[in-house]
Image 1: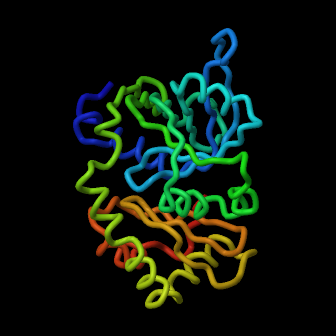
Image 2: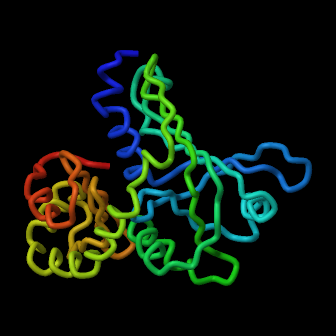
Length: 243
């Protein structure tokens, strides 16, 4: 692998983007009877620091598996394209899953998956978070790097900065920049017209919601602090489709 590619931080940036922007993943757990590997499809979002969040039911095998053995892995992949399907970015996140009771985490998950609000409060559903210990990133042929969870996620100081500004930031953005948000959303989802609102932000982008619909706006470049969000939104093109 090109040494400059690793040293420039491009791999870390690509891995973080994949983590923040991917809404569907594959959860691997160990069967609570026999210990065989079991893989299942889940919807994912990210906590403030970037750790994966997911909402699962005790009726599902993967939940029962985690209750018995919390070791887990989540595979996230870029959308498929023409050509070799193995030549797209993907990251395997390895760590320990824990059940959480966090209003902030719940808000962030539902910002990515508004339709889940219809069952998130059911007694058998709960939010979980993967405490990432290691990330194995593959960006295509010859571009393979193992990243520590500590380097992949925001550190505690960075997380506190974003969490402290969260409520005030969202209120200000939705009040003062409603027109810009609406134009950005309309350019990307012309079939979903209405008053889109920003529901969550992080260094790589913002999550918008409109009823049961959601939209991820990805900043052109990562930002360091919440006070840069408005400028980052203003720098986004109005004619670029974003998944």
